[in-house]
Length: 115
Length: 115
Image (cartoon, rainbow over all chains, first blue to last red; front, top):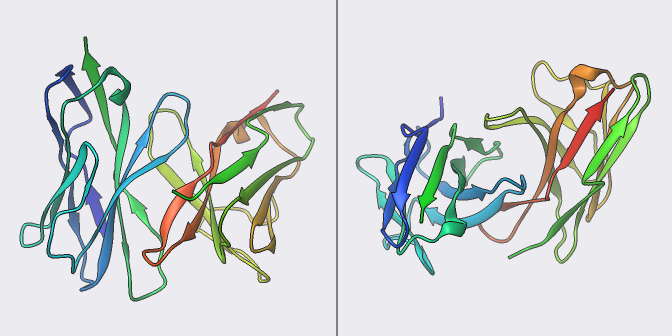
């Protein structure tokens, strides 16, 4: 069975510091995609970054990078130089790529950026 | 990124009435759309997968006669909450998958309040 685990229900980080949001996953699929989404208080789910299981390099998108460690089955999100606007709920997600199956989400981490 | 719209963003209705929520992919064709429900401070719960031109696939425990889904075109899916009750009050959010990674892009969500 597939599973996403986010062990940090909440985090407080000082503005301008880097922050790492943890995500571990469990799957028997060989080919899968990993996703991170941001959900601010407005409720919309904003796609941040994608990592394919066969991608050799860690994905980066601006201030976001994904620390992908396949052997450890971890896909941590790193936000550099955090900003007040980064305060939100963050969800890690995964879905298999070679078969038709739904995406599954972790329970999320609420990030608070302190001024 | 791809843009998904959702309408209305907020609706208040009386118990017993039906409410229709629209989900549109604005700049890409989505053969598959997804409907989620989210309770406060919880992760997204998949309700159903909507495929263009065919019947939706509902998750276990979701009443298909209560939550009617129609995927009329490659850019539009609708969710109708029939005979709404106060316990149906929730945040409903749709997504559409696109691109070579089948990333899901989410609409801004609809907050339903049933009085």
